[in-house]
Length: 175
Ligand code: SME
Image (cartoon, rainbow, N blue to C red; front, side):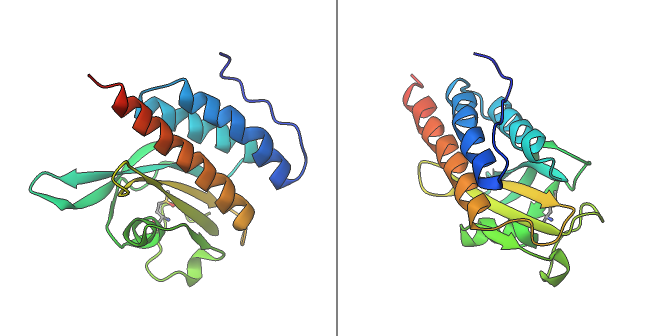
């Protein structure tokens, strides 16, 4: 299949509606989590021209599987911090609380981790694994205040769910 993303529509909701089936197709045609995340980040980023679009993956510690750290994954945008601790920043909060976090003004979020001084608002959406644990987060930064709302949250949660479904499918195909 073609990897080219074609977006028709003017409003944010219309763009997400055009993008989501194409992103789901990218996910379903790729059983590798890293290349899947890379294409999803690129598709979202090129559609909306956000400041930063990418993934942080949960790396669990063999010595303590209940613990772990977020590690920088595939992304588009300026170089970013590579490790985020549980409960720290917007990403670590979304991980710890296993929920989508929308920040209208990053200066108002206690403990926000400023990877770029240009970031003004942010959304972080968890991606769950088969056990219901957070396996990764989708993180998007905007150079404008209050960019993200429930339309973005719902769209990104649908994409996260598609990543979850394909995770289950690839696991079930493992001999
Ligand atoms: N701002 C994030 C850190 C990651 S960067 O935005 C890419 C946070 O507070 O967790």
